[in-house]
Image 1 (tube, rainbow, N blue to C red):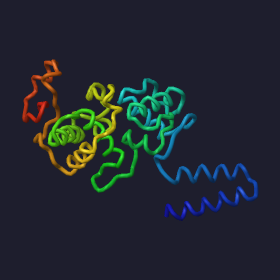
Image 2: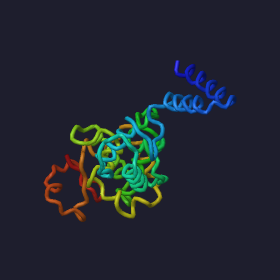
Image 3: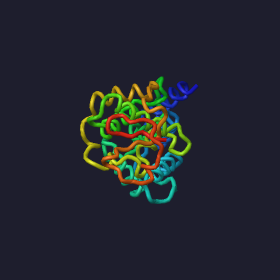
Length: 231
């Protein structure tokens, strides 16, 4: 049904342009755009539920401080820009398909239930957090992130977990911008496919680098390389 509507709208748009009916052409294009995708692209000047969803997600991640008014103004644009820079993707302030996927608002998923961009994001975190660790240690870091997605105490999207304020220091340091190791890409897929070397851990830390008393009080279930994995 959606395909039929799209064809009808394309014909209407073509006819409108041919006869020079600008207003009709504009209306046909707007309807075609809205029919094509619930979440497609938002930019400065956009309004509506998609913009509100973007603002809500950015606010939960700490990038947006404004009101959830559904208006894509300068505050929203700047927040999107900051988020894009933190992800290492094209930073243009426009919430296109890739940005929406990183925000957990996209709809293109594979058999694993995760989008390619989410898998790449997981690999990026593994590479930044577990650089120098054994392969098992890299998979373990990925498993912790996925365990958090499934845990009721954490955000329910991969991007929400990764960008949760204070969760992973790597997103704010130079490691975040280093090339993603090929081993990290493999480790991300192994973790998604169900390998959890930690046995269900939702935290980990390096005792040589962490002085946080609360973290050190967690029950350690596995030690892999330099990381203590905890529940």
